[in-house]
Amino acid sequence: MTASIVALLAATGTYLLFTATAFGWRDRAPATAGRLGFTPRAALRQWLAQAGLAEVALGEFVSAMALLGAGGTALAYAVFGSLLPAIFAGVASACAPVGLYRNRRQARREHAADEWPRLIEELRLRSTTLGRSLPQALFEVGASTSDELRPAFDAAKREWLISTDFAHTLDVLKTQLADATADLVCEMLLIAHDLGGTDLGPRLSALAEDRRNDVASRKDARARQAGVRFARRFVLVVPLGMAAAGSLIGTGRAAYSTALGQALVLVALGLMLLCWAWAGRFMRLPEPQRVFAPAPRSDLAADDRAAQP
Image 1 (tube, rainbow, N blue to C red):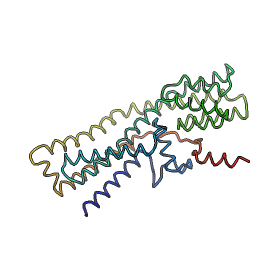
Image 2: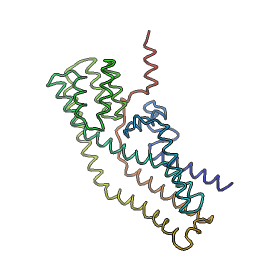
Image 3: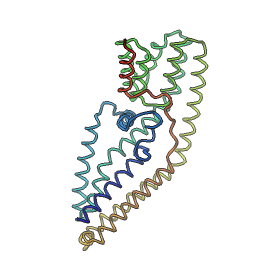
Image 4: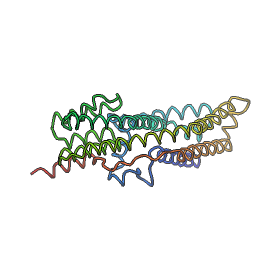
């Protein structure tokens, strides 16, 4: 009974620590929830959208985590022959999709950051020099984007063709992209569309220059971190390999089955996880905050109902 309680507490602590590191949560809610007025569910939806999984249901994502957790538990029990390390490994395996899509989200955001200076300049050119209307210029620019960004522009174009409501169209685009730069561009376009004015071109030009400088600074910082990132992965793989090899030599597997062996394995895995999270926290680059993020869809629907006579 005591072993089960300890295993449950260890699994819960591992889950909370890993998700706090992966999602950037503080206390009991995501860090962005308070600033944006999002619920935890809406923040998770935004995280999936930034990873390119806007169409994936939360239930499907949780089911995949559960299946991987069960597989990791069975594999660890076969290697170590004990319950506590197996549960610990199962929790870590369940969190593997979070880490995988966190990397995918990061790569997608970096790619979008590289794309935006060119897109903003092209948008400025089409909306000012070529005299296109703002919706037309936006959709023409969206047609020339990469495969990662184009679905968001296609969804916004469908919304425009259905409703011709530029504000809702931009909300769709901001929700699909879930990007701070996209929020700024959309707000500039909305103000120019609703109020008019001749200063849209200079503002877009200044924003493009600022995004170029930001991309150059981030690339330089990531290049300086390349060696540290390799060492971080190397230090994680070596102890796991040594533990697996030790279980196959002599009475190594039997030693893991003892109460002391289980406790030491659990402590070692916990230390590895803490060091991994601690090192990742120091290497994390600050991300631009979404100041003009759209409200959750439930809030938008409530606002629409309140505006109806």
